[in-house]
Image (cartoon, rainbow over all chains, first blue to last red):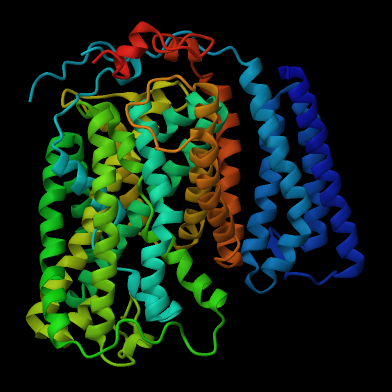
Length: 141
Length: 474
């Protein structure tokens, strides 16, 4: 598969990861709004639904940016997934329940990241020679 | 000797087979400390059964696969180079990153464990504790930078300190112990699966490390012969060591005392570890011997993993996927910057609480293992006629079935260690794709043609130079 096709798939999956996060955010907003205690970040109350919605938007932006630059877009999408996992990890008593909510977005973001990596590998022109470290005399002992 | 571009600057040393076996033993066993937890979790009989059975579906496949791959691709960086040739740059970076990250954390854990044992006897202040830790790190960082030969010697001395107390313990424990080594088979009221799950994760950990010696292949003379032989010899030694020492531990602990067995007895006065068991059967003197063995065991593991853990990073730098300075080698012919960086990270980690990082460890290692197992099959299919000085004596289809078992065990283990390990591990694993995107964008990498051009052609056939490197003409 060509690099551009990889990049396009990575972008689509990045956007889908964001959509999945927003979808799960809306779902638990109605079904389990109290799932997992909130984070307090610089005066803001970051609950599970809010974090999912926020990260979802970030992932969609990252997905779109993947079309421009797979490295930048891919990192943004994956960073959203990592943030979600850190949120799950810090909530010991509802960790597994939170993980189930975050799983679709995390898995899609991971696949998006892999495809972005493949796209980058094919589009970035690698060096034709290994780095030169000069002569190192290793005969002495 | 013809040397590959990426191995240039590294010095190949003559490593005796005995030393190589000691290195493998250190990386995969180094005493049986930690097995105490399996005994109380899974029961005496099941623990001993698992010690015998698990290797054949977990560590023996890895020992054979690592032998085949390190003989076929005897290059510094080991698994990272094997996977690059099989699956390309992306997955080799992932496995190299996961494995390296895991060993950065792991190696600090071994120093912390050694310090824990020392702390239990000497009651050090936190500053003294840290200074002792830094001293351990500094000494073995220097030894590792100084060369593989001196590292091998130091590991040999360490293993003497580890094993002599165990030999005494086994003899005295067999004579004076009163407990039944095989009974009961498992804890009462637990299902077999339940009992197995609890001990499996620890035992998988105890039986890992077989791929590590391969990372040193670029610095060993005749690695195609030495590494597979060392792995084949060390495998039964490790199994026997675990079986005999754990059986005697259960016997020495006394009748019914297996329920109190734990590797960290600091919070439980009734807890029994190898040191306590040694005191029970051999008095205070044997207890002190065993204490020295426990400290030496963890220091040995640290020294071993400092050596192997630094090589993939060195090689990734040579492939222009890591900062350039990590690929430097000095006049002693070792990747001194990569080793030094690992030592510095270890010093930082032992100065603080890093439990949260430990939960990443198993996931990172398991994913790297899965990619190694996949690589050996891919190489068998893609390069069936490549020179393999050591070949797993199985046809490809049978090897595939054999490696599917440890892959299944690895996947199973990912979900049985608890949700903290699952979530923490996923964070660690996702750091791989992120790191690749960043490093690839910044450093661009090197083409396979530039790296492999001298060994294989673009269609995967071995060149004359490659044949010489891989031992076809030797």
